[in-house]
Image (tube, rainbow, N blue to C red):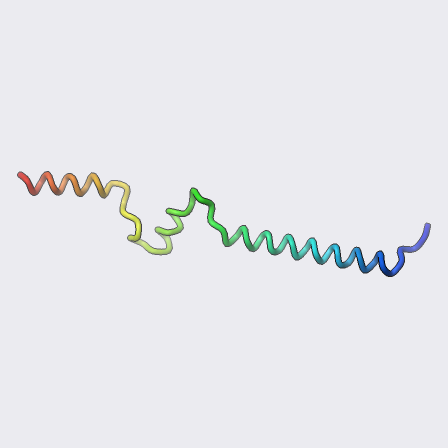
Amino acid sequence: MEKPNKNRKIFIVVLILFVALFIYISYDMSSRTTAPWNRPKQLNRALPGALPDSDSLKLDSLLEEADKK
């Protein structure tokens, strides 16, 4: 069995470094990205009060009815 030559060792080291860098970048991008179905939750955590409550329309219509009476 022949010993791996110097170029093959360099290739293997560079390949391992490239794959490790690619995995790190992929993990970093995925941890900073928000899934589309989580965006309203993220906005509400970042800026409380930026999104109206889910029943705000119902609440407004109830207030308008109370004002009319």
